[in-house]
Image (cartoon, rainbow, N blue to C red; front, side, top):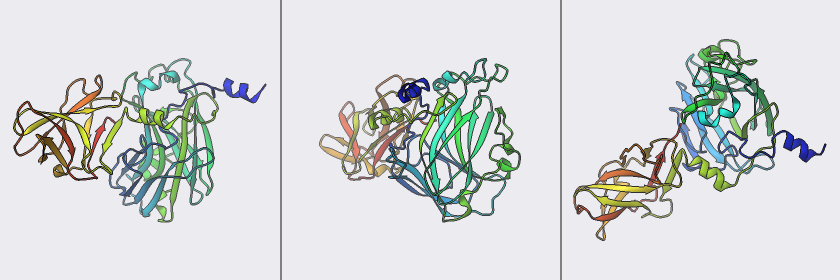
Length: 370
């Protein structure tokens, strides 16, 4: 049998087999570097990969870095900047990827005939560590975790997880909410490590078993961690990574987050507006595609970074941008509406533009993340 035929039989020729979005770490709408992280969870650099952290004094820098094994231009790099060697019981830190239930139905989880799934990814670090990858069923509080080791060179890990037929009572919900959490555990206290690793089959969540046996990323400020090429697919073996164009990756990411940034244009136009009164403007922000759910608006948090251009005049905004929520905002329409206010000067019924007010850090982020 030819190699091409073997790959086809294993699913390598099947498009959209990778259930992970942005697994090659090519899209980073929020920016390529974020420092001083560790006090709270969030999406900070590479799209769709969330830093999930709690109760740790450890701090780190996260970057989208031009490094990777052959075939990959980018990766996530974590650099420990503040160590935490006195680990409290409730501490945790993981890099997580959340997947909608409606994108997981091919697995058949919790039903007769459920399928195995295989996760593959590339990692390296500054030394040998034992870290863990956990699949967590958020709909039914079931999970399974496997350990893997790092070296100072890029290593590809291929990990197959058994089918979870259960008793037919724990399928993934067929909706747009989080059903599967893919957690790359990097640090945890005894609440998560004090038991026995649940690695052989899916089981109901026992918290102490979720990350047993892992090393700590926060053990030294010398520590760093790199990851790329993340792929989750149905089957008992990994196929070659499903590379997509940058445009395809960006389009998939923009279901969850879209960003219009000033960057090099101090008067970047964000959207057209309609004056509802002398002080209140309703702004229409165009979308590149429909969103997962009704979004929130993210901005610099400084109202004066934004302005309303009307009748050849730019008036600084004096309150935070906010979403004007309608049932179809962003989910069934090609735009969202946001509202903003100025002190005075608008003419009811007049048009205008929301723009950056001589500020290249201004942006409008439209957030519909899991």
